[in-house]
Amino acid sequence: MTGIMYLSFDDFLSQASQLGKGPVALIFVEDDVEIATTLRHHLDCGFKHVVALTPDAFDIPKDVASKVHRVPFDCTPQNAVANAVNDINARVPQGCWLYYCYNAEFLFYPFCETRTVGEMLAFHTEERRDAMLTYVIDLYAGDLPQTPSAVSLDQAHLDKSGYYAQARKDPETGHPCERQLDFFGGVRWRYEEHIPQASRKIDRIALFKSKPGLKLQGDHTFNDQEYNTFSCPWHHNLTAAICSFRTAKALRRNPGSRFEIDSFRWHNSTPFEWHSRQLLDLGLMEPGQWF
Image (cartoon, rainbow, N blue to C red; front, side):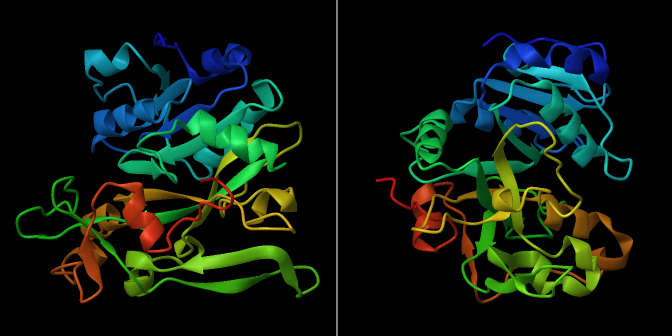
């Protein structure tokens, strides 16, 4: 894969039809933390195209820049990311697999050490699924005095328990939505007083097939309700995890929470092993029928 540097987001959109059927990883860069690491990780997953949507001010090492599409982009305006995903969805070929995340977030799926994301999505497609539920699992440094930013690849920790789900109700009828749940846990649950209510869920439909009229909404769900389901009606399907420093990083930067958190570690913390087996053993993703 050869990288391309685009002049603007509109320039990228004008050429998005060339991305084919993907899979395409859209990495939205909010700051200068672990940009290259995030891009390398998703290149290693086997995405056909990795797109870095990033401010011009941030550097990308040459070895990575030569392999990714660089698009000028500012994530800070409200709904900027959702709007960008929707614009891209409208321009890529129908049926293109898209994935989106932020810098310092890392996709893990069952058996990702030996299988590509394309192989996983091929199986998922055979099961007549057009989207995949991912859980955003909070990562955090084990020693905040040593790593005040809360971002440490070598000393990353996660919560091994404390996750739960609630029925998602239809806003019009008040009845539970079929095969849809709201998931909670991790740092967002333990420090919810510092987290806006709209940002407390950890479920994200991060992998999906493009189609006309599809819209990503502000809560990481789509206007097509079947896209928001965790499985098909007849058996469990694959799910994946996005291991993310994003919440811990934000809590350490926010003056209202920074001085109230001496450590993110608690009795249910465990070192992150950077391996899909640990996430499967903890029940943080589901292999479904894929063995």
